[in-house]
Amino acid sequence: MRFSVLTCFMLLAVALMACNTVSEAPKEKPNIIWLMAEDIAPDLECYGMKAVKTPNLNKLAESGLMFTNCFVTNPICSPSRSAMMTGVHQTKINAQHHRSNRKIPLPENVKPFTYWLREAGYTTILGHEKVRGKGMKIDCNFKTQAIGPYDGVKNFGLFDKKQTLEPQDQPFFAQIQLNVTHRGDWWDEVRSQSKHPVNPDEVELPPYMEDHPVIRLDWAKYLDQIEYMDNEVGMLVLELKDKGMYENTVIIFIGDNGRCNVWGKGYLHDPGLRIPLIVNWPSGIKKNEVKHEVISATDITATILDIAGIEVPDYMTGKSFMQDGFAREYAYGARDLWDEIMERSRSLSTGKYRFIRNDMADQGWDMHQAYLEFYRPAVHIMRGLKEEKKLSPAASVFFNPTKPAEEFYDLENDPFELNNLIDDPAYAEVIGKMREDLLKVEKEYQSDDDTFEPTTPKSVQIFEWMKQNHPEIYQEMLNGKEVGFHRLGQMYKAAQNEK
Image (cartoon, rainbow, N blue to C red; front, side, top):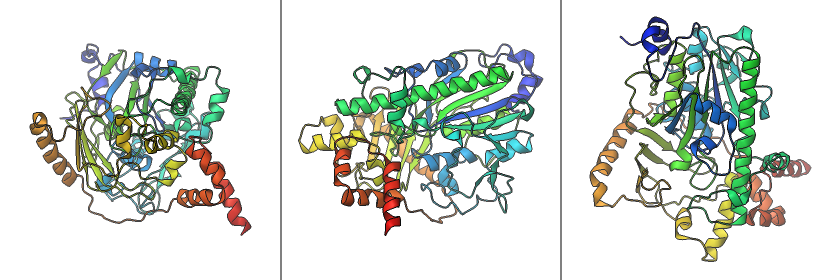
């Protein structure tokens, strides 16, 4: 017979006193807060990132669990969030295409995990009034609404209320988005207001990025956003303590996908798939432990239900990593439509290896996607250096006109994935197994529904309009300046209204 974590705590408190992960039984259902920072790899001080300070997240990791091999199921926000909101890999519910199928309900047997929490007596809360942007992003590729009941037929609400954490709502589950780390027009403002902006000379760039002043500054700005976000985490922890709720609250900190930069968001490589995962529970976890198990983001969803004392539904592809015996051989990654760029790539990741199959190998990685043109200064600088034949070999790979049909990396010996070992005979046996296992996983996670209703991104029109009507701004972009997507969007809208 299988027991939930909470049930085990309450029935076997004495035995669990000796457990190396959980030290004592909580007296009541815990509150759970899922903090989801946008567009970040494990680029925190506690994970070893240079030049950044994250004291609040460091403290959560020091008194809890920090996972080193957690991977999202898709390196783009909406497919990744769709998987996490259901605990089901996005390909299995036809939610793999970015911002598509949003008028289509989930399959009848699948429900958002907040449905099960509400059934168990939890108050479900979206966002927080004091974080930047109010933290209310949902962004799922199936029919939803933020607040209201859910039955999957006429009602599609995911949460009961928004933006406040109050003692009378206990036990509660809160999902709070920390959006400052997402690329946005606010990055310069955040940096200008920082009391100690990150010094570009102190950052450590990965070898696949060219060492250039503009790229160093861009990386420093990214770390500035992480420090701002860390302060928001500290504010939330202080609020819990002030309201007497901290001891019985589980805090789970993750990223929704990898960092928005070269090889990151949008790609099945480490900067796009690997995310931070920190679990802190003062009344349930009292040991600083770094854990190296392979975790899929859908496992986080299942674990939340398990912590709440809810049996994990059989339809979920995620499993609770708090259960004894949890073991995952692979994390399955998939990349499909992103804005105007159709793609089909699949991957399996372990702590040691990554295998990628590119079904559209005739197109490269740098596809000049309109939205990304506004937000990747490093790409513009590196393109220019490539034209001048000044780009290093490691940095040049990203700009190859085609992709290999398959990629294989030894992550332990090559963490930056510089050497594709797909043809290395020393790895032939491992590659063969992962190739076969990927086919099996694909078949298991295939959706019965092939409906495809994408949305048209405004970024395409805005980008073309900018090039034609404001070549001076476009030139600034080519020189590595973030010219402001939202600002250009407002200019474009005003110009259209004048016609």
